[in-house]
Length: 437
Image (cartoon, rainbow, N blue to C red; front, side):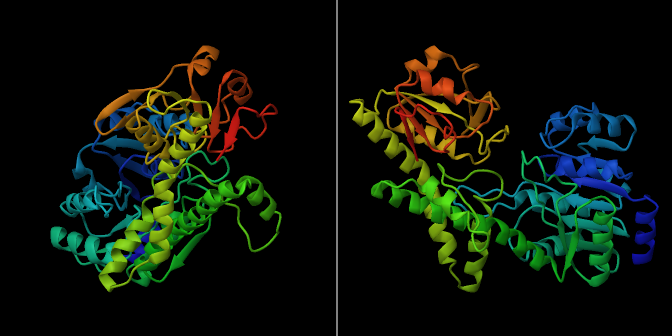
């Protein structure tokens, strides 16, 4: 099986299947197809499937013309029918792994996808989980489900591995194609073949590790590292505010050290599809071993508190203006979780808005990247433009995303008061009405 698959990879005869056509799956499917492999994408959302089959892009990290070209050439197609699995040689599972309402891992999408795959799995297939999860998922959950559903034996009839997605929406330098990849599989042959498959597609290095569990833990380390360091900076920001010191200036000064320090900046909380979630996966799994990840849990509490802290600071600004939060008009600038993208998953801005409304504020938002967002089953619409009159009407403007296509000088000129939680207005010269987190 190993030699047969290596030959098929070399001859570009592998048919690729990608389960989940979101921020991870679609860019991966596009790169596989661009590398010359026939690729079939699957998603439960028929709207996404229809868009792909029309060559219409909906993901920022995918180049529109790339998608159009590979669809027209027949290298990429999409379906909502799981039976396509019987026709593929390589399967990448790229489905969401969110947290449930109790902040515990929700791997139902992984489980249901694996069960569906198992019904159509054939001999000589590579299966790779890319969704972030807790260490042990591939061997403890995926492997038995695939074996039971297919009647095949892992390592003998099919290869199974884990290769964590590394997607940074909006990153202008590192995309799916040139970001280094980590591969851990069950058995040396599986690791070699799966790594060879990725090398045939990607420009970035492919590092082989000894097991899926190492690769799973590696991914969680990446984001836990960021979570903890952001938590440290956020906590020091609260202290610096009491001491009358700018944490932004402190970090900028510290990062002049050429070794031993990496700059992390404060903000209204954590957002995105990884950093706010992944540490909880490890903390949950650690409890199985009677181990408490105290540092992770402490940083999580700090970061989770930031939206409330920002509202407390906003309330003090209004108080100095002899305004109550109850009934105050507040304009939020930016609901995306990071600058210059349209992704608002887990965005702290949404929590800020929620807390403001709970305190009685009249809240509107403007985001040049996000016209509307859905939260708790309800759709909220933003302002279509940012006019001088709308800015003047607000008792307080709160900047919660540092989008570069917002005219902050214009905002500062017309705003009564501004609370900048992202230091987006650092280049504005007239700063009498600006307070920075």
